[in-house]
Length: 290
Image 1 (cartoon, rainbow, N blue to C red):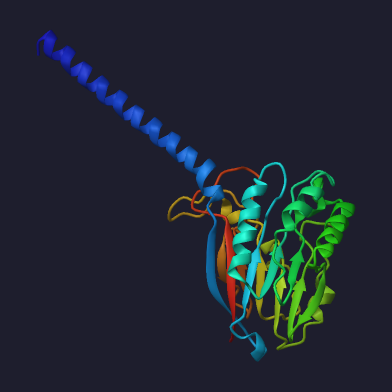
Image 2 (image 1 turned 45 degrees about the vertical axis):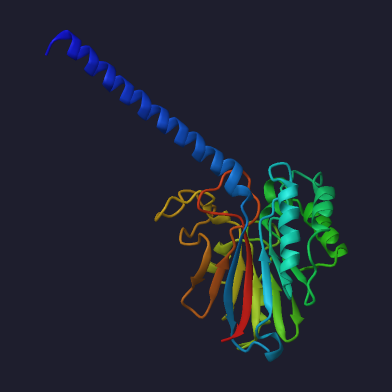
């Protein structure tokens, strides 16, 4: 091979390498832009049936909406949360539950913003029910004063905050557990009050609570959040990072094989602005008689 042919071959190989590197850089830039700018603000409305044993006939076919992990604060666009709440209002659910982490804060510095944003949240005909998450207790997840102030604010907006408490809604028991990582996780008494066969739905922010020996024979649905769906989920693979001990608990519906089922909502907000295959979610559960 003469020198001219060698030079041409080297130039062709270098051009192919540079073209390939450029394509990879463009693709990487596009993927980065998508995960940062597009998917975190691309709301998905998920619809599913929620079969409840002994569901009162008057609730059959009613729609229960679930929100979770709004993380109102510096990391999440309040405009996006407000748009999501306005969209939810247009969907006209019969009932609303929020499964924790409404705010990300050190102390009470974000509570005014929570009040501004949550004024756009619908209060459906059958009510809005809230269980707290770990971030609702401020930095370190131990500040009871922050959780108390947040609870008072939400009640002032017409919501029912359930902290190891239950409320009867047209014959259905709505139960809210305080957060597993917070200072007030004490679900034993309220779960023990649920008699066998009592139609109920339990709100529990952290899905790991489902594995604690506190359920007193409860059979029914647990609605959770906390995981954000892992935020980054490779195709056909589980998310590499999940804030749970039980790595099975990612997002969606799970059979717990003892008469209980759990649904994990991917949440609206985030702690880091990145999502891949884990779009922010509003869930519409259609209550049906099991």
